[in-house]
Amino acid sequence: MEKSCKPSVYGTFLYELARQEAEEAAVVLDEYIRLIYYYTYRTDIWRKVMNKQNIRKLILIISMLLFPITIWYMSPYLIIQGAMEGIVSGSFIVFVCMLLGSIFFGRIFCGWLCPMGGMQECLFSVNEKVPKQGWKNNIKYVIWTIWIIAIVICFIFRKEEITIDFFYMTDHGISITEIYNYIIYYGVIFLILIPAVLFGKRIFCHYFCWMAPFMAIGTKIRGFLHLPGLHITVKHENHCVSCGKCNKICPMGIQVSEMISEGQVKSMECIQCGACIDGCPQKVLSYGTIEGRKGNGDRKKD
Image (cartoon, rainbow, N blue to C red; front, side, top):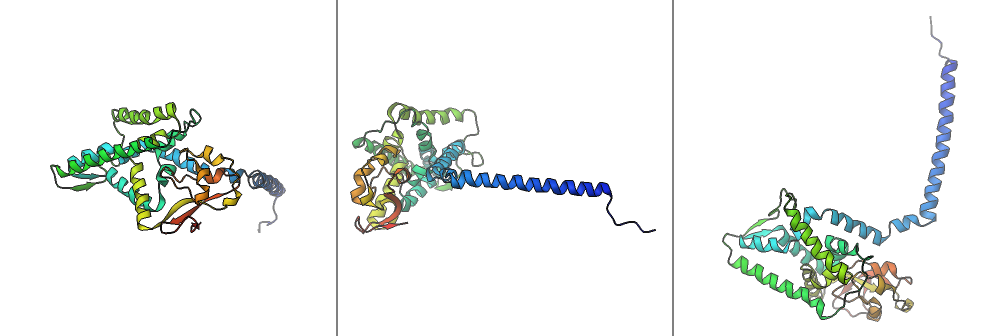
């Protein structure tokens, strides 16, 4: 006896119920999509979320969270300790990479990747005072010179043949694995944060940072070799209304407005963060490349 292919009344009821539920769900989903579109694109929320400065700050936060893993790769002491043993450590290689990268990108590491710089920016709401520029900025170069001399002496009088160990003094590449290492870790953090709380914006970067001179030297090499490199350039000089917002928003306290007539932000303290670009209401500034052999008026813009 053949079975009937006609659906039962109960099956038809379930089918109709599922169809109605699907239609209602589609209507609800459509409303959600419309709301998302309205509150992102139409209200510029998406543009604000994807703002260059928000992305930069997110990268700095990630860098800070990873600092217990990466701190030994930025340690000035481990280079000296490794040099005494004839070892080219990971921090030595990282600093060389900073020097080479800065030839084309300036101090972009300071503005976009440095965990210590990010920590100081977190304290801007505590103390927004701008550190005084001038001879005090040269303190870090004195510290750096003494440190480099010590490294050279240690390599000269080393006890072993020179070897390379990128993960020197780490545990499978991780810097902080022992409890007692956290004493050093928090000591470094306090060394960086206390001056920022007492004296203002990124003061450690201005006066004491042992990494900044590498990038400053790289920038000088770029100029000497007439190589193109990343700069903040002036896109529309005539649009500047001298409102001073670029000066206030600069995390390094550079007087950006005074450099508009030069066609670029020409300062060894510039960390290529782009805050002045995003903060300018007249969109006077932009990222671009400057060739060392050309004058201020001959610049390329991205």
